[in-house]
Length: 257
Image (tube, rainbow, N blue to C red):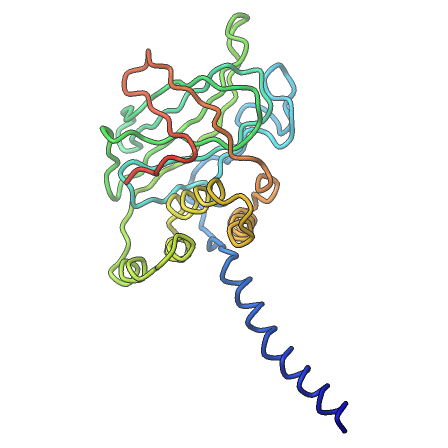
């Protein structure tokens, strides 16, 4: 009789604790909703196949943009931050360019020096350049290889669109008490840049935090970038100060407003 009571108590405890544990895991696995095609180019390297080994890129996966499936970076920021995975490369420099799709005018352009170490890098549009709400912008990130023998260029392209949160989303964001909760609000609102930036910053600051690792893995897996999820965040880039307005941001710095 006592044994039966003991087993009943154990069973009740297990039934009570399992949903709680499962709920905790669910709360830390951020996912991005499915997106619709918007006419953006692919988010992997242009002009070459994955695993290109012709003097420029020497590993798989190849140069890849960290973007949703439709390769459109939605943001509420006038100065968003974009992320790419850069594989082992012979390139010494990279170029980042943003143009206004409505008129083809160049909005921002900079060149940065890159090291050969593979990893996830980021670049921000500086504060003296502001993207407008409702406009679409085309970005391009290019690796420049073998300039002494005639430059080879490997690039990825995509779109940026600045938008706004609605009133309800703003209230949820204001009520969020921690960065992961804020990232969840942005993800549900289909705002990619702020979702990715928040989780990436946490991953850099808390590399041993299982909740952050789950959030990062869930986010990248939801946009078919699970191959990139295990790659390190690297402080690879140095501004070429010969370029007017050139800027780069390293992990560990606060993201732009």
